[in-house]
Length: 120
Image (tube, rainbow, N blue to C red; front, side):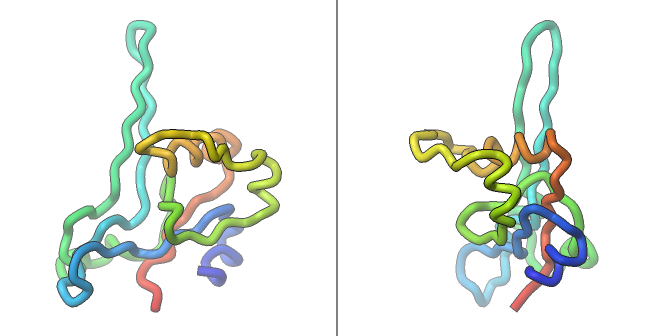
């Protein structure tokens, strides 16, 4: 993940995340996508975990390293300098989507977020 961060200059890098029994190699996410829409004076905010629930054996090239909108806090590499620019994390934030809501300010500032692909 360090190599991917250095090669891309990304502010945050996440691995390919798995779920369930490790032997099953079921993908939890390969990075995530944030979508904000505005219609008729209302805005909506949605997130998607890329490749969620897909078996690794069927994912093919989709698990290659590349850009994404967010990675999950429980396993990521983050540049502390970028975090200082944004300000500290809000420990009082109570949100089911805290990972993606915290990524939004970085996305607006065009700091990179990438998935590292499969790492060991």
